[in-house]
Image (cartoon, rainbow, N blue to C red):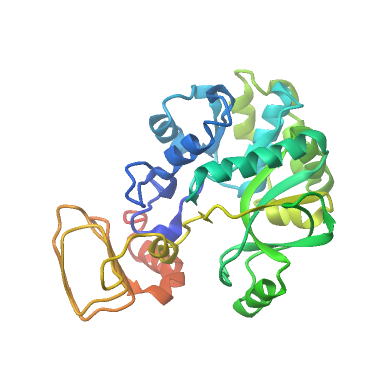
Amino acid sequence: MAGGVGSRFWPISRNSRPKQFLDILGTGKTFIRSTFERFLPLVPVENFLVVTNTAYCDLVLREIPELERHQVLCEPIGRNTAPCIAYAAFRLRAADPEAVMIVTPSDHFVVDEAEFREVVSEAAGFIDTHHSLMTIGVEPTYPNTGYGYIQVDNSGQMSEQIYKVKTFTEKPPLEMAAAFIESGEFYWNSGIFIWKPDVIIREIKRSLPEMYDLFESIAPYYNTPEEAEFIRTIHPECKAVSVDVGIMEKTDNTYVRVCRSGWSDIGTWGSLYEHSEKDQNGNVLSADTALFDTRNCIIKVPEDKMVVIESLENYIVVDSGDVLMICPKDHEQNIKKYIEEVKFNKGDKFI
C-alpha cells in the first residue's frame, strides 16, 4: 500500500513526493524500496503488487524498476485502506484464488528483518491451512496513542505466538493505552495483514456490502486492458474507510502473530527521533551544524546548509528548501493545523 501523502512528515513529505518515496532515515534507500527488499526473500518479483495513487505510478516504477507496469494498481482518488485492499484482493482472486495475500504499508521500519520474515512466514503458513484473517501484532514498549491496539484471547492461543483476537481498538487516549499495556493482553496493530483473497472478499461482502458490489461488478475485467478504465469509474464511489474500522473491528475470524523484531511505522518526527542516532546532547542531525546549549532536538535541513542554533531544547527544526518549520516536539500533533493554515493562506504551493 503506497498511496498515502505522509502529511505528518511535512514539510519534507509533500503531495508531489510523499513519505514512502523519501529517504527520511538517511539509509540511502526510500521507504518503499526498503519494503520491497524486505519482502523479496519471501515473494517472487512477479508476485508483488503496489496499490498507489495514479499520480505516483511513475515514482513507484522509478523506485522499484524490477516491477512491470501491470503490477502497479492505480487508484484515481484516495479512499483509505479498505478500498485499496479490496482492489488488490479482487485482482488476486481473478489470478489465483488460493494465493496467500500479504498486505503491508510501504513506509515501515524493521530492525531485525530476518526475524520479521520468520514471523510473516509463520503467519502465511497458518493462513494457508485456516480460512481466517491474520494480523501482525507488535509487543508494545510504551503507551503510544498513534497506534491501534489488538487485544488477544489467551484462551484461544493456537501456538506459542499465535492468538485469537478478542478486540481491535483504534488509537486510544493515553490513559486507555496505558491500561492496555498494564493488562498484558494488548499489542500494537502493525497494519500488516495476511489472508487468502477469497477470505477477505467474503468479509468485505459481509461488512462493506456496497464496496463489495462495486468491485464485484467489474469481475470480468480484472487482469485485462479494460481494468484501469473500470476502476476509474467505480473507485470514487467507494466509501472512505480503513480496513481496521470497516472490517477488522467487525469480524470474529481474526488471529494475531506476535512480533518482537523492533518494528515501527516511523509515522511522525517524534518516532523518527526515537529511531535515529543522536549526538552527545541527544540531538538528531542531518547537516553541518554549530550548536550551543541545544539538546534533544531533531534538525533536518538540506546538506549544503549550515545551521547555527543556540539555547533550543526538545524542538523539531525542518528545512525543506522552500519551507522552514520550527516547533516543539511535543506539539507535532499540530502539523496538520500548520498545513491547513498554509494551504488556506498560500494555496497548494507549499503543500
